[in-house]
Amino acid sequence: MKNDHEAALAAADALIAAFAEGRTDDYFDAFSADASFVFHTTDRRLDSTEEYRGLWREWSEEDGFRVLACDSKDRRLQLFGDTAVFTHSVTTRVSTRAGEETLRERETIVLRRTRDGGWHAVHEHLSPDPAAPAA
Image 1 (cartoon, helix red, strand yellow):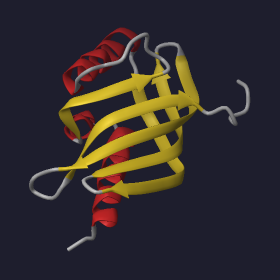
Image 2: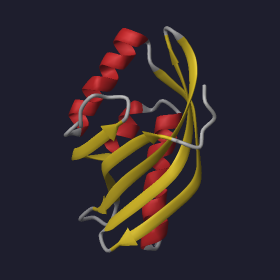
Image 3: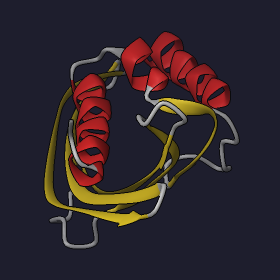
Image 4: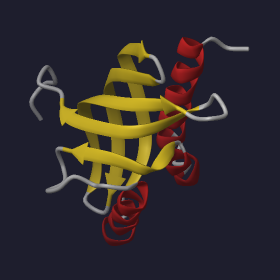
């Protein structure tokens, strides 16, 4: 059986892999229904996974948005009882009707232990990486 650190890190890795590989159902399933999301690219906080999924759907249908690749580095996982905080720097290559773009950001994912001992993300915060070279 995995220890808590390994299990929480595996949950974060599975979420990131699903995002990177465009497996949107698996990606959204990694979040609890009541998760919240704060992205520097949106004008508001998203207060549920369903709200985020709806916005993703809009991006896909209206802009042709899709994730092409995602690289996670400078990773840290901290455990606080039934809560884990995962931070990393992320480089994501995306495609829209306007073309391809590479985004360099920092991300925090907060996870909580579920009743069955698994881990679900309950919050995601994304901000621009100030160390990234100017576009």
